[in-house]
Length: 364
Image (cartoon, rainbow, N blue to C red; front, side):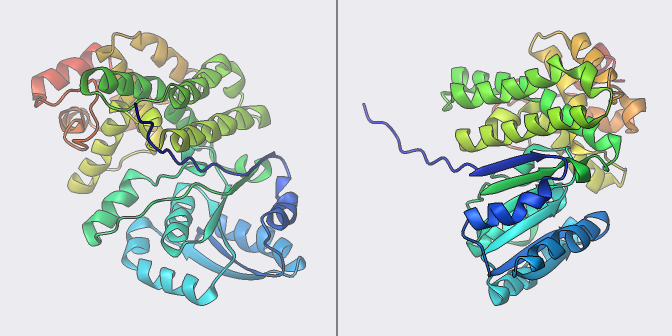
């Protein structure tokens, strides 16, 4: 029997806590980044202020030269990606720092991977596990595929510095989205197990356990999380980091993304097509978890009750998306990734079937 080669790249340093940004020079020194040039990539509003007012001065005091890129929106980023790549090539930084939410961190991750540079993650919210994973969002992937024929091996960050003083300033809604993204792992792992049994897909018990442990951390501490205090942010953040590392162990997003994520992706596609406003990824995944739990024979009411404890949306009215689009999203979900077998199967899902499912779990 031959054993296949499996490359796992994990963050070397993970720092979390209030005021932890002061450790940035120490981490950079450990990564042999001193008296060199670094590139900061952030959003264009609040995260730009953090980048330029809180992080850049710390680096300059250490004798580092600092260049910056600001990301407005994903479409604009993709349209101008060659300019950003050129700027990084000209600057030739020793490391790239992604500062912000999913948009900034995904952009930094992508540019670092294309440019063969190391990447550090400095999140300013706790809404997604991309902070520690080697994958980018579905929406960014969609925009990239529509414009370019890029095949890139994405890198996980070499280090994560998550300063709670920054993260606690993000809206409560972002933390709620983080909880939704984490509860979703229960469905993702069940879908993965199903694909392993029915399709012979490679399965990692260790990676699956990491994903389930992240979900369980949320379930066991939901009362604490509902206080939205420092401890709440710390719990969710650590669970998200653990989930992202599980993706690195698996070598794919399988332990973190199943039919519930496909439902969220479907809503993103439909929002682009029909012009309605979609919601944060994690909020949509939370709703998807309720729906898919019924198909897996789980107790959907228990998941609903858990999400309600933090005021997460659990139906059409609360998430602000019309029922017609939710029905269409269920119908579209198993068409998005033909390579990802889930509880939704491969056959067409009729309008009536989707509608009955959503009514059964009281989403519409």
